[in-house]
Amino acid sequence: MMKLMKIKRGGFTLIELLVVIAIISLLSSIVLASLTTARNKAKDAAIKEDLVGVRTSAALYYSDNGGSYGIYTLFGNEKTCPFLAGSGAVFYESNVFSTIQHVASLNGGSVGRCGSNNVSYAIGIPLATQDDAQTEFFCIDSAEQAKISSPAVVNDLIDINAGLFRCNPVFFVN
Image (cartoon, rainbow, N blue to C red):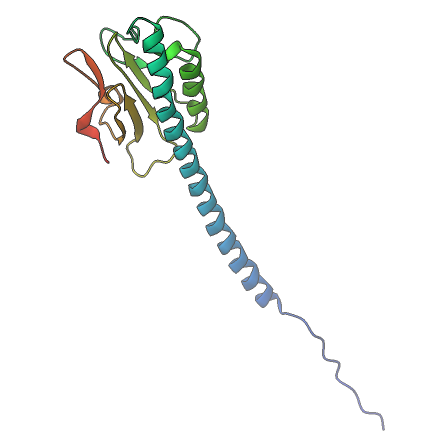
């Protein structure tokens, strides 16, 4: 008499494979979310570093132009930073202008707010990372402030007080 031999196959069941695929998908989505956050934080660091570097160019512009930053206002207040080349204000100086364009490419295209008169200037650029519903800006000015701010209204980012453009201290978050 011949015995019937039972053939045992090795392998995984469909349920086991689906569970493994689900776990891998979950882990990969967590990693991708972390990478996006890390990328945005790197962009923010680049924006801050670039804007802090603007101070040197602005100081050279001021020195080369008879102690003036030039006039760049809208009815005496700040306005959108220049996105087209021009002349007559510190924001059109080649290094400053190219920095504004570069940081706009990092934060998704927003050139931010700028204002200058003969004796002061201020620049506020939106950051790439947004932690809450309000847009956070990195603001620098001729008084050597460099702060993150969350203005209630974008037009409140830069304060014009006593004829000086300054980052508005009301909205500083650090």
